[in-house]
Length: 300
Image: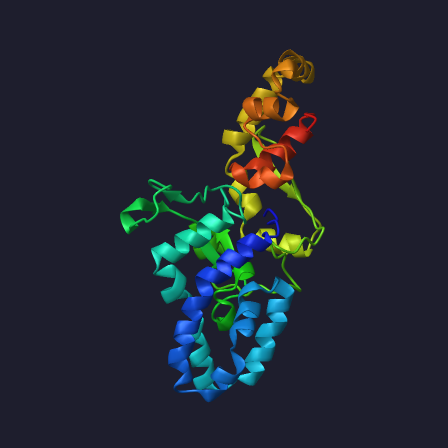
């Protein structure tokens, strides 16, 4: 898993401009049957739901659930904050949000690309045939338990279909036991490798046992999935490292220093990595490659 940076004020503002009118439209219909909704869900309250940070969302959901605990009211809330109709079934809306988030790879595994691909991106208007690919949005707080958080920015985690649907599925995350991508818990992990008794390469994940990070990584089967790449990307990195010694990399850096090409650029060209942690998401398996290269003695 790679942590997500906090979105800019401009990004959050644009997000609520996209979602707020759609929620208000559905709220108007629901108000006809439930007067309490009218009194509670004013614009500022809706914005609070859409833009609050993870821990605040968790508390907010409990508060609202207590206020509208009847089955009829909860059903109405589900209809107002309806992810399926507002985002999932609307390519226009879902692609706008994906473009806003602008994440190249899956937040959970960093192994699959989640690029938002739109033909003729600079056109003023797009139709569905222009929209080719986007990430899935995992509801970190599951919709089944937290229906009012179905449209909240910090509850929509850009991810690949395997992590979102196959691995996480209906597992109920909470901030006590798992790491939320927008909450930097200062819990870390790193990839390592060894040769087993048959001289086969094996990938391992170094993490504090039973920590929140450990529990999170196990949900997404990170060690098992990356171990499947032992004879692929791992072997390639070891081979590349044997060809490019530290002295050789430094000599290349010196050659290009007058061309404004720095060491980070050289490492990207040689190993296909982004050295800056903020850019890890731009390339698949970037954290894995960084960790393994450090084990191999590459200074990053």
